Image (tube, rainbow, N blue to C red; front, side, top):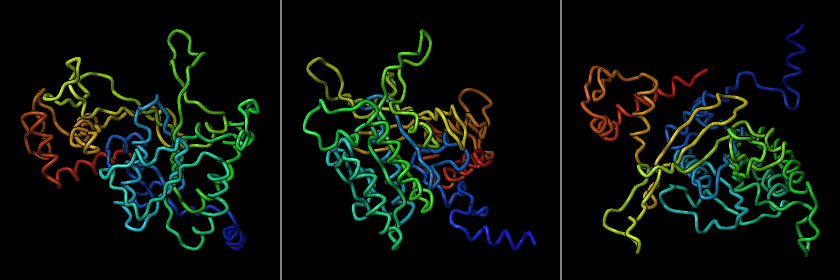
Length: 341
């Protein structure tokens, strides 16, 4: 008798499909950075239908991480479409070929009025999805760039109202939530940081900007920072400025999963961005992950042993990872296998 009632319940709107695994590899959006994927925990990437918010200081790399995911989506799925709402209105200056974003399957909007973001998703984009448009990723960069409902269209800054922006983001995210969940669309948003006046002597000096609704909405909270160490910079030894400083060609970006409602929290990763080539040095990420997860033998400080093969230095091992696709794939599979629940 219970089977009869369960079949009826299963046909109702919103009934959860218990056979669907959001952390199955086919339901995950992975970036090209192994360590960025690893910090998500189970699934090793952002599940479609879930949301991640990237926060950090100005020019830390938040938009770059969003671009990495967009390019990866287009490499992963030959039909997938991505949409970005660039509320800081500088899209044209942030796009480079090395992101591998397909312009035929990517549409950006330089808008910050809430009706052109949240209303557009629900009233204009949702019907297109229901007609079969393969939209798989929505980006809002950034949430702090969205105007409050009451300030939008006002002629004077004096018309601002306390709480307007927080309420706008709360209602806007609530409006698009059914679209994200029911159609398995990954949502990536960026947020600014502000001074943490309650940090005390030893607490963090910065915290993510935004109201409580923003903090409740997302499943993944990723802090993005530049690695400020001099050793993390890629420098041009031939070009110097008027003060004799070397030209900076790239730098390392540090990421940390500060909170997660569906995975692990506290994991960190790091990848390298070259300003003319994009993401580089992923073999170093794989090496560090394999070493930290004890997937390689270390009989001494120089030697790495994998499946009986000896590598006599760190550089030797990284060269092998870069050149041997089979070795690279085998190590990545082992790394991501450790993330399965």
